[in-house]
Length: 133
Length: 314
Image 1 (cartoon, rainbow over the protein chains, first blue to last red):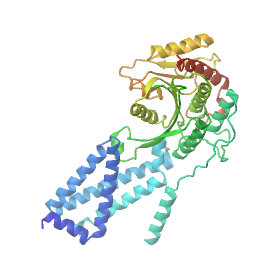
Image 2 (cartoon, rainbow over the protein chains, first blue to last red):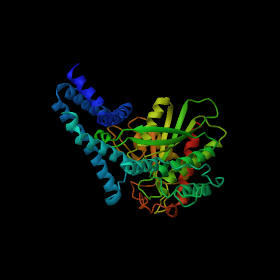
Image 3 (tube, rainbow over the protein chains, first blue to last red):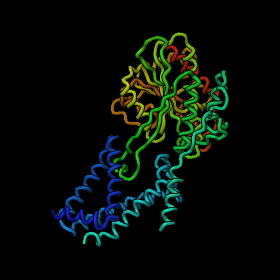
C-alpha cells in the first residue's frame, strides 16, 4: 500500500469525523465551482481543482506536507467565512449594501452558511496535527 | 452541544422559509380608461394601492419584493389575453473574483407574446424593468411608469384588426444591478432566433417639470429615430434625440444598453433624463405615486402606440 493510500485510509478509518468535515468542505466548493462553470465562470472551479491537487500531492508526499495542506485549506475556509461575516456585519450594522442580490446573501441564511464554513475551518485547523502526525 | 445544534437547525429552517405567494394580487378589473388604468398599475406597483392579498408593494428591491411584483405582473399580462412566461436565469458576478465569495445573480424576467393576426416570423420587443433601485424606493417613476406605458400600448395593439408582426412585451428583472435581466433576455432572443424588427425600451416616463411633453429617445438606428420623429411631428409634440455610436458602446445605465452590443435595432425612450427634465427622486423613498405626471405618461403612451401601430402593419 502506498503512503498516500495509507494516509487516506487513516483519515477515514481512524479520524472519520475529520474526514467527514474535510469532505463536506471540499464538496461544498466543488458544488460552487461546477455551478459557476455551467454559467460560464471558471475561476471557482479552477481554484477548487488547485486545492484538490494540493491535497493529492500533500497526501502523497508526507504527513508534514499533508498537515501543511490541511493548515492552508483551513485558513482559506476561515478567511472565506470571515470576509462574508464581515460583509454581513457591515451590511447589518454600518452601511447597508445597495445591491439587492448581495444583501439577500448576507441575511440569516448566508450568515449561517458562513458560520458553518467557519466551524469547518476551525475544526480542520485545530485537529490537523493529531490527524497528520 | 445539543442545544447549539438544535438552535442551528431552527435558524436554518427559519432562513429557508420562503414567503408564500398568495394568488390574486390583482384586486379588481383593470379600468377601461387608459389614464385610470395607468394610475392603477403605477399605484399597485409603487405601494399606493393594496394588492389583492391586502399587502402593499412598498419597493421592488429585495428578492421577496421582486417575487411579489412578478406574481402581479403575470396576472397583469394575463388581462391582455397573453400567456405570461418566465425566463429564470443565473448569471455570474461581474468580477470573477467575487464568484469565489458570493452566489451568482438569480432572477426572472416576465414576458409574453401577442401574436400577429396571420403567420409572421417578425417580432417587435417592448421592454421595461420592474425592479426598483434601492431598498425602500417605491420606484413609481423608475420604472412602474415604463410598465404602465407598455401595458397601455399593448392593450391598444391587441385591439387592432390588422397586426402583421408578433409583439413581445417583457418586464426585466435586475436592471438596477448592471442590466443582468435584460442581458439574460438578449441570450433568450438569440436562442429563440427571433427575427427581430426592433426593440423598444422604456425607462422612467413620468416627469415633465417644464410641461413641454417632450420625450427623449436614444438610438443608433436611423429608421427608428425617423419613426419616432415623424410620429412626434404629426402629433406636434417635441422629441429630443440622442444618436449613439454603437462601435465600442459600453454603457450600463439602462436596459437599452444591453441590446446595442448585440446589434439589435433598438431605441430607448423616456422622460428627458439627459436633457435635465427628470425626476429628482430616482432611487429614493421619494419616488412615489404622487410625483408621477400621468398626463405626460398618457401623452407618451399615445405617441408610442401610434408608432407601434404603424410598425405592426407596415
